[in-house]
Image 1 (cartoon, rainbow, N blue to C red):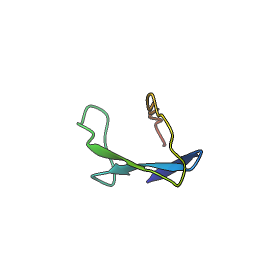
Image 2: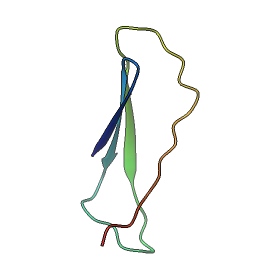
Image 3: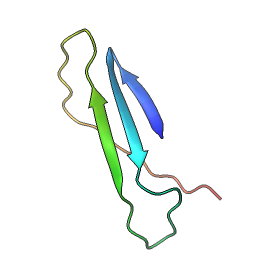
Image 4: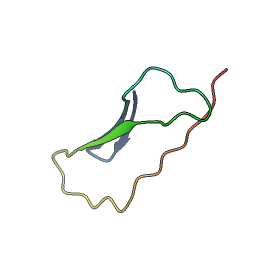
Length: 52
C-alpha cells in the first residue's frame, strides 16, 4: 500500500494481490479520505515501477 497526503486529504492505493507478473492484470483500489478542510482534487496519477 502506498499513501500520499494532499493537504488534509489522504489518498491510498491498495493492491488486491501481493505480486503481479508482466502481462498479468493488475487490480487495485484508490481510496480518497477527506480531511478537515474542503479541497478540490482534479485528478490522481499513478505510476507503476518494476521492482526486481
